[in-house]
Image (cartoon, rainbow, N blue to C red; front, side, top):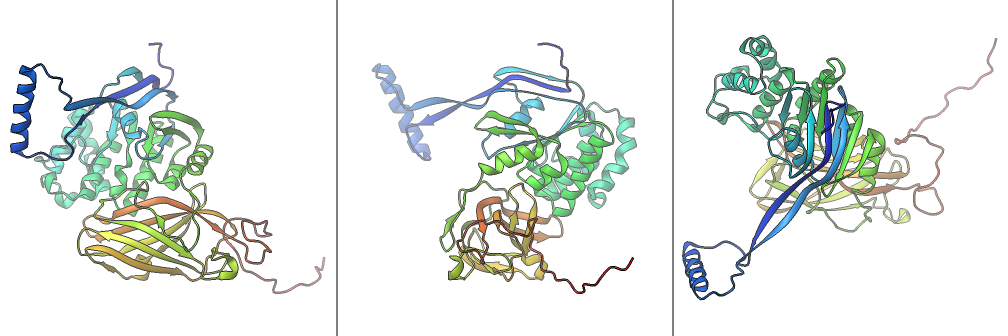
Length: 434
């Protein structure tokens, strides 16, 4: 391989997995296994052809090539199954590539899954030293950073508790603090930050910006949160079905991703979101959405300064109380404009075990005519984990806000500029005296 010019250089990278299939669908009992083994031996003795199992090759990544320079903040984006996490595991040396080569200059710290690099039986204090040693830090170096790590993670009270007793939020706080503060040349962070509360996510983004801009270190960040990607990353890599389809400045790559990511939905129709790309624990989840402006003259499309009513079908695997349920509207570039969250009303919603129906109404939609993206959020609120997502669909579908005064409906030219409508008037007009 030629000498690496950037801190990360990837050439023709590929990762292949072999998937086994069985002709016996579903699970088998012990009796089934014994019978199957007996038949297998009998067929073998009689030289009969055995077709119980088949194997299939699956390329999680194929022919990926790119280069990253020191100090770059790179977002890796794509739909679920695009190969993002596989790429990070290859760069972190967790797994080896099937084809191609990777050249890396510098020490790598990665946070890919909750508890990565931690031993569950050890305390938080012991795991800080263990993780630092894995990263190649001396005991003196770790000790110098120790207080800063603990303060950032906010787990001082539980420092001498085995981490197996930590909540997922505490796990992530400590794991990120260790990865970010032990001065790696390259910091790799997967979507695991979504487990933490909103305040901690903001804190992590600030730390990653500081690591990159102030200390000149390289950051690779995977997220479905396009707002976070645009705030942190100067460049993006877009993956689709295991292949690199675009690389460049963040605004243009995010726009390309979003243009292929969602679809435009019609008012008064139930929109199935059960198969949408999502994050969360999966203990409760959105099934479908129906929206309307309640105005037949607008074709029930939402319009500037008009109402927007949403019916939400939600499933839950148990009786539970949620303190945060939100409908969010973004620009097509991923900027959050509207966030109608019951948490701001200081109320909770009780979900039954099974299917639930929730109706939410925005009284006045302060958006100019245009195409926007609707997202959905459902979360528990607890002292230990903060605002923990049960289900999070950032890009469910496109929604069009129309100009009600127009002779025909659809996105129209408007004298208002920007995304949000603004009602104002001139209070006084007089001659300017010079």
